[in-house]
Length: 147
Image (cartoon, rainbow, N blue to C red; front, top):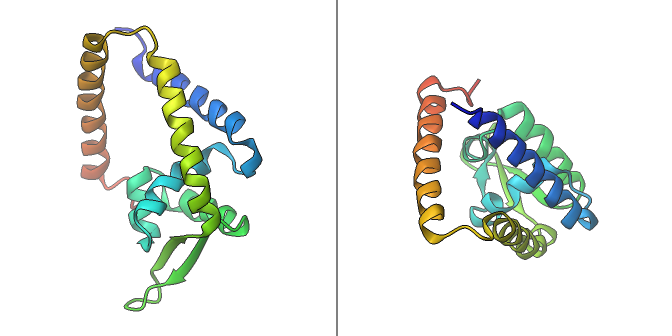
């Protein structure tokens, strides 16, 4: 079998480089773009919930959110029901960045999928979905993100 996970890792790093280049003016680093869509779609999401959605450990989420907060992209507020729980909200600055992030994702996908047939894309998508679901099930069963 070929080194599929290595190829996926290379693909992920190339995507990060592409986003960093296309969104350079934002001043954000590649991992920070992973937060834009989930935070904008779910204002008031807790840091723990966000960690589970983006598949980063809590330490990195806290560190990344600090950078986003310092840059004026998010606000963190304690929950009314439990002051130990921090809720994350997008600022106008992040909401204004959202269309550019989505555009960047669409451009990257178009670049990668150019020349592939509908059948090839469907087969790839189906297979990748199965593999992704297995990975997510493992992480959830081992409670890896909570650690």
